[in-house]
Image (cartoon, rainbow, N blue to C red; front, side, top):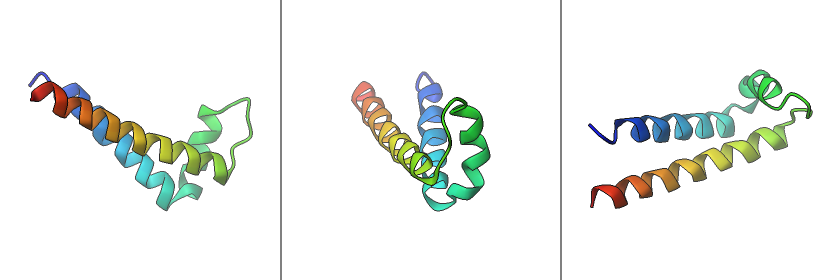
Length: 68
């Protein structure tokens, strides 16, 4: 039960990363809001999606390290 919060963050990060890779046009409005001063492009969406997937992998391994 102590790892529930980080598990939810891992799942959300992975879900947003995969969604950004598969459907970048559907996430463009979200990234236009998040990256307000900068123009949102498909390259930015894909780069942030890859970063989210890497973050979820790192968080998952930190979760495994804590439980072992």
